[in-house]
Length: 388
Image (cartoon, rainbow, N blue to C red; front, side, top):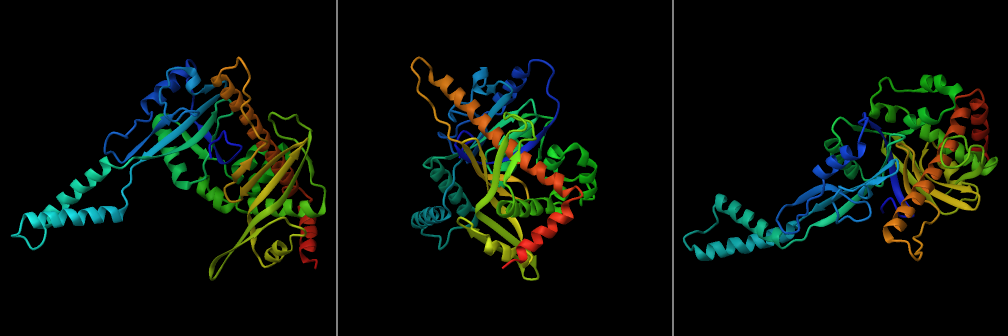
């Protein structure tokens, strides 16, 4: 689902690079145009990748600001068209072509190797002319003020392709994943910054090491939220910057779905618990056996609005990120482009409030996890897990 959908999966990156000091629009426009999407409908090319408009994937003209510029945001959509021939279809037509060759050349009992390759290429090109490419798009929003890019996909292959095309387009820039430790550095209360650094279990600054060595952040966070959901107040206060006012109350809790994993001599073992939870009985048993919560559905309530997301604990990706609904209101005298732009800003506001609520919850956890009260909190959690 696209980033303007009411429910989508997102991952986030820090954009590393220096923007030009003047005429940023022209700088971006030139690079998007140079790497824009080129249709392959009329040819035999098998792949085309390039930028298109966020609200119209048929358009790849970036000469006017409305095509990608939204205040301090850049709205980007990467389109990929791929033309694929099923292997079984290729083999069937290859067999027909070889039979026709042998019928026309009775002196041969079998098709020579070189001729077989020629026939294969001819058959393939013929089928490609009769096969329409299948389009796929990935939406992204680059907040140029914060230097954060939000990408609406969780497919590892698509993320890699987006990163590569982004670096190709914006030479000198790169995307760095915002993983649990990186997000912790951004939201941890100031008095615990040194404690977080000491708790870092990675011996290098390599992103993969920071992710792998600090999986405890996701494990402990989800276990703590589960305990708080059942035993203590689920009300928190907004502490992170964003559209909502600091100090406003909100509710956060786990429910509906959890994935727990453990790695033993027999390899990784995983269980999935679904449905509304009463006392998390099955989850508690799994935790006592040594499993860790690696994925869970989080709910946030603020005023009368609800946000819901499935947090993937190892990377802090947000799957099925659902916000309050945004709809286009057809007002008389307002053109469609203005209505779409209004929807974009409202959608960004709701996404950012949801992330602000999550970061405030994560910050509350870090203040406890890195402070003097964590051992006492762990004893309470262990005692609760041991209850019948």
